[in-house]
Image (cartoon, rainbow, N blue to C red):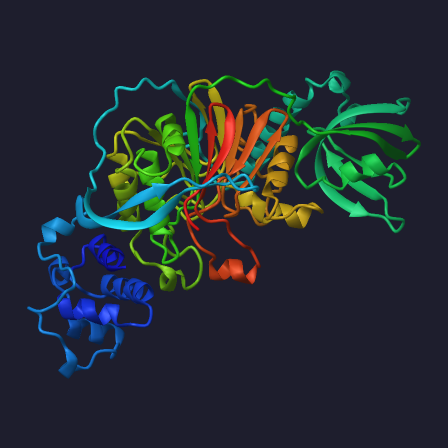
Amino acid sequence: MTNNILLKFAKKGINLSPDAYKKVMSSDNPLNFASDLIVKLKSSDFKPVDLISVNGETVDEITGNKTIKDNEKSDETETSSPEVNDASEVSKDSISKKSELEIKEKETSPDGIIRIEESEKVVDAKIKFKRNLEKSDVTYDYEVIQDSSNKSYTSGEIGDLITYFQSRYEKLHKILKQRPDLKATTKVADIDDSQTTLNLILMVREIRSTKNGHKFVEFEDDTGSISILFSNKNEELFAEAEKLVKDEVVGVIANKDGDFVIANQLIYPDVIRISEKEMDFGIVFLSDVHIGSLTFLEDAFQKFIDWLNCEYGTEEQRKIAEDIKYLIIAGDIVDGIGVYPNQDKELSIKDIRLQYDEAARFLGNIRSDIKIIITPGNHDASRLAEPQPAVPEEYAKSLYQIDNVEFVSNPAVVSLDGIKVLIYHGESFNELPMAIKGLSYEKNEDMMVELMRKRHLAPIYGERTPLASELEDYLVIEHVPDIFHTGHIHINSYKKYKGIHMINSGTFQTQTDYQKIKNIEPTPAQVPVIHKGQYKLFRFID
């Protein structure tokens, strides 16, 4: 407990005098009291020099804490509590007196989670935090296949919106034309009165139900619109039609009977089954770390970094860590500023640049032979509308200075030694459960499958997911990935779909007030890994 308390203050550049330390330790919950005190010290008008030695009077003034009366203050020269006097020794580069943890092995539980645990044996040791600025001699076959950071443009005019939907239609039309049933198709404007069978590639414009429970879907292409009936008597087809959402592009085979057009088959763009590629290395997946939040699990995250550095875990677990070559962070590495009302009350760091500095302190301590790829999320310093350009250097300068860190847009597609990874933070997960029956946050792997079937990361335009009306639709899934990596929901999930690893990497944040309202139970500090083609899940919290 003593070391943990001192570390919490030291990592924020704060030294406590003995009487201040005693006040913290005498509180009902020292760890919580320490966190609250740090927030108040950092949010007040203190200069760095003022935090070199915070005394007990300052603690009382800031917190109103009266657990120790003035006449009960201990003599500052007589205390058994450890004290750090030199401010240079508590910088982000060096922290002393951190516990060395003896690791013990625990068998994998029936749920398949590998739990990394520590024994109760604690000894004092010195751990140095060093910014990782050195180049690695490891050869990376790293290629960015899709990144919209320097290609994104929109004026917001109606003409851009038309061009955006034309781009979406053309890209998905090209994918659908590869299907045998859709090689020969008809445009809406070219439908002849004599035709009885129609093969069409269309965009959903509106969906409505009839009094008898059938569905009428109004479609359109670049020549005109057409209404098609999906009868509930054809149960299999009707079930597929219930998954339709506005603005997506599909293939429809239908019969024309007078003024009615009745659907016979619905064809999603989808992916064909891919063959599994060999890999002799490992990839780690993170998202929603939320550094800067009071609910960020700092200790668990440090354990994760220690494991990556092969300094934590069982022998078998450390051997897996030795094989890790890439780390992908799919957005929300920091908690951001002003993302939602009164967010400042839930922040331990209230300056977004300092949040990124703190992220650099952690990531800069990861060994240099692991390439780190970072995309933005809705909490990051990037525009909210998708596609999001990479986090700008002006906000995350300290991260840009780390040699093994790469920044890409959201979404992005990268090739890692031949393994193609589609990275998407997952903002569209907010609306899919409301649009499609049977989908839920708890089983977000099913939402990932649905996006892959639709070949679009955010098909519904103009509702909950903010989308920019670009001149090109960068959210169409043109490149079939080997791995599809998402976040945002804070719930780990995994599923293999047609040979594709579907991974949601969860979070390093405990349950937020918003999640309590929505009854969302996060799965914090669980880290997915694809190790030599096999999925594994490591847990860094009890």
